[in-house]
Image 1 (cartoon, rainbow, N blue to C red):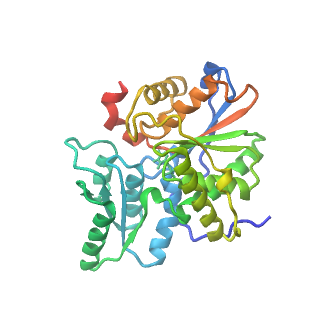
Image 2: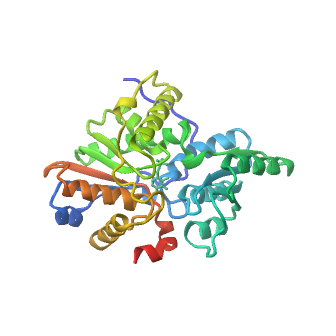
Amino acid sequence: MIKPKLQNRLQLAHLPTPIEKLERLGKHLGGPDLYIKRDDLTGLATGGNKTRKLEFLVAEALAQGSNHLITTGGPQSNHCRQTAAAAARCGLGCSLVLRGHAPESITGNLLLDKLLGAHIYWTEGREVKAVIAEVATEQKNMGHTPYVIPLGGSNVLGASAYVFAMQELMTQLTTSNLNIDFIVFASSSGGTHAGLLLGAYAYDFRGSVLGISIDHPAEALQTQVGALATATATHLGLGTLSLAEKVSVNDDYLGKGYAQVGDLEREAIRTVAQLEGILLDPVYTGRAMGGLIDLIRWGAFTRGQSVLFWHTGGTAALPAFADKLL
Ligand SMILES: *Cc1c(COP(=O)(O)O)cnc(C)c1O
């Protein structure tokens, strides 16, 4: 089989991230064996899945002679915080275009963005694209060379990172003689999902890759992930593949919308914290784990099967949601 071409890549993450067995949670739920892949420990200013993507994205920014990163996200964006940290590590400037208005209290990721030295711009109802264009022009006028990273770092470079993360996982599974039937994780802008799906194909993972949608109807996310996986395959020299039909999304846990914490997230976060001493986040992994726990209760997986929950990070957002979590 053709293997992905090696890419221009920085070293920002602590890899490989550990795999741990969730012994007490598994027993508590009485279903499949549960494992967790700790991408919350990738290391960039409290870590998360964007660190892997930034190894490829910032490598390209540097190759193009850029000295200033611009990206966008919500007020508590983990992607923006990791981008600010990557910029600091590489000696680059950083501007973050955050959706909405400046909040009264500066906490969680927003606090870290500021400590990391990022310039913050609020959209205040304007189009993200327009604000990014303005910020880029401003940087050029100051003699800088900006590089724009898309929402969630989800282009072919970002998705490539999760193709190689799949290679990392396969090596770990072989070394520890572990068999995994399902990989379950939070899926939002689609880069992680597209990468894992393509990586599963490229490295011959025999189980299923199931994304729990955080904020999109299943069909929309499937289309997005399928298109990105196809584009990433081309980028990595894997040829023309159509993976659209293999994209598996569950959108039963959208709740009241993006970053709206409800019982599902609160209970999942408290359960995993108190049984395993592991922190999930309020927006992504809390929702995805809540979904996984619900699926286990409904009998979607059987005893004897193994499910790996891919922890994508986000714990820095916890303080910003204190009132919803207690
Ligand atoms: C961004 C993010 C995700 C979603 O990853 P995508 O590649 O955007 O789908 C999941 N979990 C956390 C904690 C994130 O910050």
